[in-house]
Length: 589
Image (cartoon, rainbow, N blue to C red):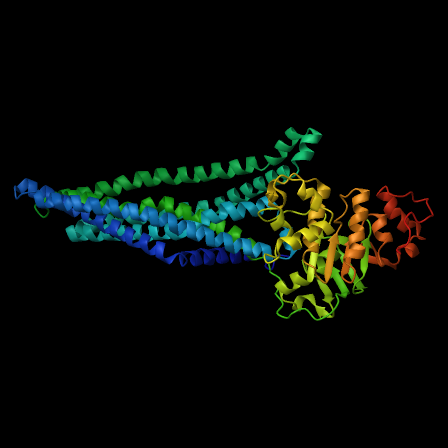
């Protein structure tokens, strides 16, 4: 999908959406945040009371008026501070966990709702980085904002207390504070863009590592570990450069702030000291002025919090880039009554990362076995994705029994169309749940029946835990995994079953058994099969020959076999010689 807004305008829109996302997080976990806010306010009040209590204790000690009351007050203030900080830490952890969890759920739900083509825009590692790291960073925002707010309250309270002690002392503080504010603002503006670069490099590094782990067998087999390490770590100089730039920006600002703050403190204490010398102030008030000056300058301590906020804004923008990807509109109608007739009418797909399909018009008869053949990149798998609305066409319409797939309610569509893929992934707790994935109400006998039809029941039976074997650790070959994927499709008993090269990993004997299931065990149901084997095409009712995204020809396998280019498709797979003029497979009985 092209960027809706080019250049800087798009960046401004993304920043705006990122800020809105952070605001929505701040409205989320209300109870923990309320506790954090209450604890922070209590801590702020205790901190503001502390200089006054210390001043009272000093004055009482100097005048001999019995310091016990002041000592008791001091102990109570310190106890209140400790309790408030403990409560704030516990509630803060709960609020952060809640915000992070809600954000991850939202992002995961959005990713799983996207068109398949949209999920291919970003590498898997990049998406994982945003789901894990960026959500954790953004999830800290609610507590960070509460901390910044109470820090400002504390600073304002400290400045107000200085004016109460003596207006001259207050004015001295106010005269120096704007310079510190300007330095902090400049620093935050500098680091905001640097965080974007840093997190972008992190995401690219994670994407390369994920790709390498997915292909670890190829890396080991080819002896290219050193070369792969170099490729994975290629973004490291950029990551290091961004990190060093952050440190340099911090160094340039910290020394200025570190120099300015003591000057403000000296000026305030000098003014208060003159007040003590002139008799306007008590010695304890001089001590209180020192304490309140430190509290008034505590807004400078918010620099770390503001840096964290800048980091979170960058993370939120990266999350919003994914949340901004369009989700296909969900239909609201049930599937039309019918036997499973599938229609492609003027269907075109031209987007990135997807094999193109151009102006395809095709009628797949109800109850038929239709094989789609063609060279790699011809558009076969794209056609399979379109058949069950795993992706939408850019133009044209796909219909099931005369009803456009766009209009059918998603859950109902999943019940009407089943899929089996070339490289199935086993999801669920154990193998039984993996076969019945998405159908929690299916009983164990139905699972066994589907496994028997896919000729994998005996394989599962030989495992020590049988159908209770954990899906993630089941010792299965590629062909056995394909048969489990086929069983997962069979158990749904859908009116349309789409097999995207789902038998390519089977040996000849097993493939013949599975083909028999497709022919006999699924008779009456519509089957769309992406095929590379001549045996599968030979037994199909209809063969659709794709080339460069278009339908080059359609008909029976025996009729198409007369074309030498058609025979060459299977010769490229090593099944037959292109010079062989005889059909190596008999016609269907």
